[in-house]
Image 1 (cartoon, one colour):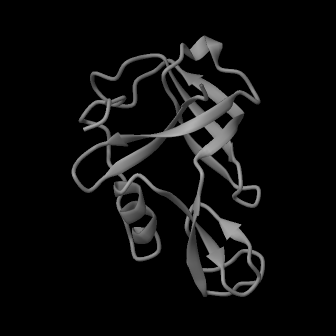
Image 2 (cartoon, one colour):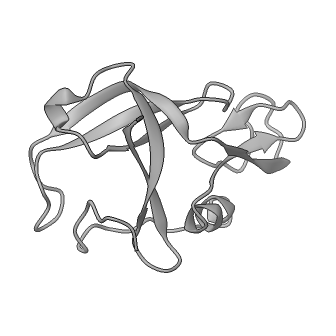
Length: 140
């Protein structure tokens, strides 16, 4: 198991038919995004239709997990019991994803040290044998 950043009481994400391939790849520590088979636009979070051309045909493309902080906030109030405070929720611009941004947490750094445009890299928080959550830490 990987390092844990959130308490066991945090609600875990639920997969549906649209997001299941994302969560299956995450369990293997791979970050994937949907790619429209008709217009080529990428999307995250997964959705049943392309926002560009309304096609329902999509496949999955693996991305590197490198990115940078686009925006962030520091949370000072707990969302679950026994949660360590403060923590960072950030919007991460993903490299090589067609301009996609992803909401996640920045870990491995004091919250006050997080900055806009800070380079980050993906790490995985293993919640169980079948569920891993993407987090970002400063790029070394």
